[in-house]
Amino acid sequence: MKSQFVTAALLTTVLLLSVGNSAFAEEIGDPPEPAAVVELDSGNIAWMLICSALVLMMTAPGLALFYGGLVRKKNILSVMMQCVFLMGMMTILWAVCGYSFAFGGSSPYIGGTDYLFMKGILPDGQSGDQAWANELITFVFQGMFFIITPGLICGAFAERMKFNTMCVFSALWGLLVYCPVCHWVWSGSGWLSSAGSFHAYDFAGGTVVHISSGVSALVCALLIGKRLGYGQEPMPPHNLTYTCIGTALLWVGWFGFNAGSAGAADAAAVNAFVATHLAAAAGVIAWSIMEWVKHGHPSLLGACSGAVAGLVCITPAAGAVNPMQGIILGFAAGVVCFYACTSVKNKFGYDDSLDAFGIHGIGGILGAVLTGVFATEKLGATGGFIETGSISQTMNQVISVVATAALAIVVTFILLKILDATMGLRVAQEEELRGLDVTQHGEEGYIFL
Image 1 (cartoon, rainbow, N blue to C red):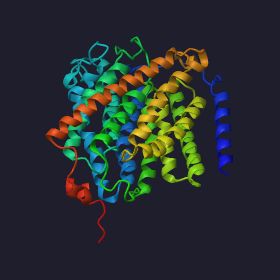
Image 2: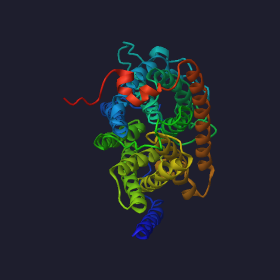
Image 3: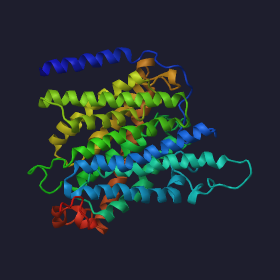
């Protein structure tokens, strides 16, 4: 039975590879830089505002429920509080200086002070001049990415990090890791943007969001250490119902995440939308098959994890590959991330509580590299290895992965060491045993009378 599943999986992959390079899409022009958003017509404005709301929904309730269901019941509110508080704190930080550091200036490596305190993007009152609205749409849409990215890291240190330290870490990480990488890739002048020497495709955040957060999550898990009792006592998810609902909300919200990165309600958005959906579906199937082979049955948790893995993997590629190629990326993510979250994690013994690195880090790296393999000129991209036989675009993708990972590792390590010496990273042992809901927030998620 197991060999039949393996054979079926291999045949499916071969079939997909054989058709993935076919011409499924008409030419639709160059993939836009996310910073260069929309022509001001009512349809595009409505689309971008809806997409902004969908991306916000991914943090809460999406990520809050997805992560909340995976922890033990004594820590569910701590996870939800992290998500909700980051929605508030990161939004204000984005308005004060984050947007400027990400999109201001003309340096290839670091942002400027052009937009501090939203200077230059506020309504100016000039009759007939609505240029500020274009910038304001970019501001709010990109701000939703700034919110969710540090939230993803929370999955690595769930159930054991002090809340006040988490707040300081997230703010500093956002300014020192997220903003520079965002500037490199999306500012229009960055060294990894279309104007740079090493143009790497990152349509909606493979490097900017997932690799940066996933690699940082691994550093957090290693430095903070394992949960008390990890490996000696069972720590199953306390409510997979929440996780399933959270997955569904993330899946829907991801349409805003990826299709919204087209910057308009156009053909690029349609392609990104469909490719995103098919990649998620393929991720579900691939992870479920892997569980079927290894454990004899598929699980709901595995299906949810596969969906998110597929969504992560397609994120950098959504504007450069067609939907059939999206299936290949999603299927690959389901297989590779399954091994990362099971065999690899078990072998090295680190406690990445909610698999932030295994899904977002590994899935983001896989997606970024495969973008260079499958990118197609029919979507306005430089042809990838399969289409042209050249590895130049793939090498640019690899350079972007290495640079993003290096910055994330170095800065995260330094931040955590400083915060550990000044504030402390971890709650006291007694507090961890009682649970973070009560000890950090004075509340309980479940009160049964």
